[in-house]
Length: 307
Image (cartoon, one colour):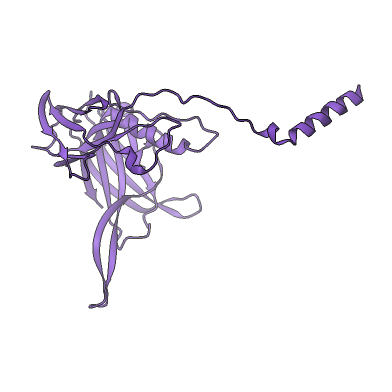
């Protein structure tokens, strides 16, 4: 019996050393899918001009030759307010027919219903509906420098935002910290560096003091008022305030009351990003609200504060 087990083990070892044991070619048919239009239209009450970039989906095993293959030219789009046609989009240029633009007659109005409709002869018509969120009250904001210990014995800054929530209304808040950065160019005439551009970029947040706050798109912190409906709420975020690339310590705190659809999309987008390429994490589907399409349409009530 011992000899039998030895021969069997040796046979398995020899087969395992062969190339065919470790690899196998399997032919499968590509899964069927529906061709759909895709876009992301994230708007807020400060917008006056809207830009819509129309793309399409591809099958899992299809090859995309270049990035331009994603774009779809020749689409039409319209924005409706309370069921009435409000904005008709037009191509940005002849060469950029996949980018549609429109001018808003007035800012989004709280409580009004807005619908985006897009169509193309080769794809099913796409639509999505959102209700503009309500205004909200920010009592105060402050940044406490070097207020809390970091993971490696250093000190972190602490952002505190004091909100007053509206009772009986589902609200979803997003708080993002942005840092101002500058682009410079050397002026040989004066021998100095001139500023040629200023932009703001989201700072990476190390964590939130409330475990109910979740990371979302663009390093924003997401929180639903189901935990403090109608009450005062203190949002706290820990971050490194001495990030390089800026000539001052000013930060912009962007606070938004977002729709439930945006809340779901942003949360799932971040989860999908973190799961991508990790074999130990189950794949995450990104939420979308475009009927017959892929993507997100949302409207937010936004306030910005410089600290």
